[in-house]
Image (cartoon, rainbow, N blue to C red; front, side, top):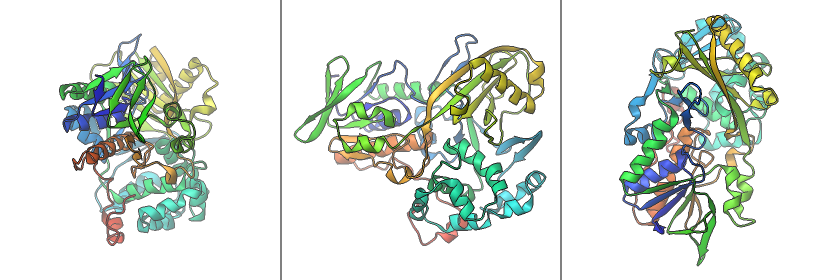
Amino acid sequence: MANADAVIVGAGIAGLSCAARLAEAGLKVCVVEASDVPGGRARSWSDPVMGDSVDIGPHILLNKYANMRALLERLGTADQVLWQTEELLTVFDRGRSMHFKVGGLPAPLHYVRNLPRILPSVPLRHLLSNTRLAWQTLCNTGPELMRLDDRNGREHLERCGVSEFFIDWFWASASIAILAVPVERCSAAALMRLLGQALGHNDIVFGMPRVGLSDLYAWPAIEFIRRHGGEVRLGCPVNGLVRRDGRVRGVSLGNGNEIETGAVVLAVQPAAIEPLLPARHPLIQVAGLFQPSPYISCYLWFDRPITASRFWARPWRPDSFNTDFYNLSNIRPATKGGALIASNIIWSQRVEHLSDEAIIDATRREIAEFAPEAQRARLLSASVHRIPMAVPAAFPGTETVRPQTMVEPGLWLAGDWVDTGLPYCMESATRAGALAAEAVLAERGLYRQLALPPPRPRGLGRWLRSGEAGQDF
């Protein structure tokens, strides 16, 4: 293809989301991806020893991921997500499992039913120390929450009177698990936007892919794009952009060829922006503000079943390793051995110096604390994936500089770090792709609403914000 209606650089979630929607709208689309495999930071492959499909790291979905779910419906793979409706989450803390549930009462009262589970570990006075914080967050609009971006999460929590005990027990874990940075380094705006969503919905459900991520969305998206007349080139790096008459007119490929187009969408992570743009381009400086949050993911195969649980978490502590665990043998039907457990070590700099063997030993010990059978079972195989970037680190100041979709004439941006009104996640990337597709179509006079909005609060939060129509978290 020497020319195309739109060229999308990057075949991760954002790029494939954008390309699928543009191809479906009738545009001649070309996706170019430097890697030989699609999926970006959410991909999978066959383990060379055991043959199971393993992800770069286990990912979890939310039923509130409207754009991601719409994409999977479009691709025909929505039924490949197992939704955990029996309970929200199991937290294992100091030898005790706490099973958290939602629902039963209007938001935000839906968490009341969990008090009997929490109180043995957390005295009531520490729970009540969150009252002012919760009220302020429920009352604040999106722009008001964004004004908290100048401070870190711990600082804001302390200002609102939250006890040090509860910050260390709950908020430190929430910040690491969802924002992938410690609470003392995360943006208070990002953290409070999460709280607003948690307080505003009494029906949150976690979902776990029954197949590898590449089979869930990446390869189906490529098939969808090709079926609608588009092209996807893997192993095809881009050297830069082609400009003429004050507008981006195409891309220059690594092999020296060019693709002429009326629209280029950069669906790449921040670190990949600079090589594609001319020196001193304003977007380069913005992209440089977004630093990566690394993680390490472990996969352990045991010779026997070790627990009936599918998914559990541990509170964050600096001296521990993993935060979340997935029993893939109870999620995916055809795994090898008796049990395949995947886990995530988030903000992993503190253990990066350790060998794979040391990380596997520590992970096995932490699994056995929850499921003692893991210590008695024989370990058939194990693998360690060291990933330099899970998501951009949500440091103070980053929320208010997240870029818009439009960059300059002929050039748009997609990715989880774009201003989508959502935290950095698969849903943010998917929505960014849809927003970019909307903008490209709009320039051609085709006005379509493709991006679904972030979920608005319900219950008390909705009533408190009834006069703030259109304001999202």
